[in-house]
Image 1 (tube, rainbow, N blue to C red):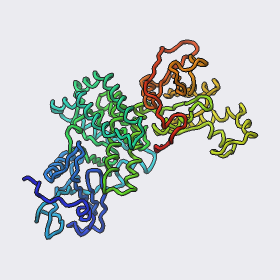
Image 2 (image 1 turned 45 degrees about the vertical axis):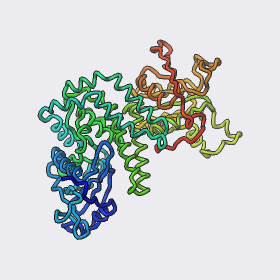
Image 3 (image 1 turned 30 degrees about the vertical axis):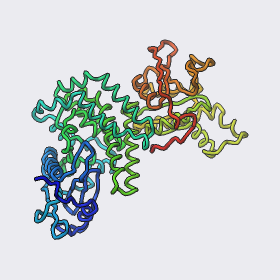
Image 4 (image 1 turned 90 degrees about the horizontal axis):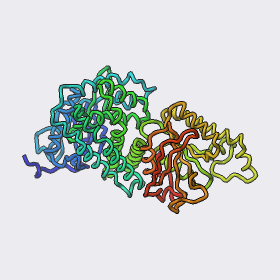
Length: 540
């Protein structure tokens, strides 16, 4: 039936109805209503009632009652694959005697999905907060996913959703939603855009191989920690993307990347790596690992997009709006970190003489990528018990820069880096690094532990010392890249992120590395250059 003539209840009326315990046939003592960007969730005693909002975000359309009813039915059916007995019924909401009521006696104006209420303490995000994370906790989840992904062969029609053109269209739609110059630093969108363009150009054959190997599945589409429930040996994975087949038909690597990204976001990178390693082995899919960073960039962007949409909703309170904005920025930091450094806990060393702008560059890197900022100036003053933000008197300044004091500062910085990397966290180190012995201590540490790092020297590169820049510009940076660091692709990606040209690599004494000179036409943005404008507007 055409429902265009039916009177949809206002958002306020529907919210008020769901908040009242008297509205429910079983008479709960209290009701808590939670909101997502697309739904209202009423937690009413042992049950949850889920009502879809009348919204259209492009990737989902719930604007008519018929569409909301259809998607409720699809949600119930599709989620039964990984959580068979969670959903109970689709309950009509009608107008009766001038009021809203559950049931079909009256004009039906809305539908609610009725489901069992799962114990909050057993969702995976909560379980991981309670103690030291144990990979054994994830074993039943991985068993469930292995069975899910290896069920009878998927329909041949799914192959179209593994085509490069389709994947690119999906990621482009997400990226366009993040082209927000009024809300985000100007480097975010172009950096992510360039990363995706380069990846597609370089890995077209890999995407074709995934289709040939039948790695495209009817998956979950939103495989996050808060959608996985573990209690009494029972695994319930629910809330899949019922509303858009094109987002649920995907590479198994893309499905698992959501879980891996969410574990990274929750500060459990070792568990993220465990999940990827285990599933690659269980599914006999070694190429899964090579796709993981790419799909984790996409998944972090998806979450940033969702948080942005939520922050724009009129009914969201100011505190929740600000929280969504903070979450959006954290997800984008994670996406940028994947795009530039990958998933490993990378360390960025930024050196150069005083006044060269190295501290501004280092703070910008830390802000954009969400890395810990370590400063030799701060450590030096802490060790000398000097005020951190006051100028040191001239009479005491020499005492801060004795060889012994300087050596102690670099030892403290290296110890801090080692401690962070032991926790699988990255850092940006801001120091002059003018002494070759100090640089060598860091380089040897990274080499011994096979840890990825980059080294920037802020100022004139040796080929141009004393002669000025070949293009007449000053104040840019060159990059030293020892042979055991990460790839030139990552170096170029970070150069794009900060909009400055990079000259590299570092040449060891005994044999030169492959010659490579790159210049980038886009320059370091004004907000990060020579201390002009605020830095640190991002949450780190």
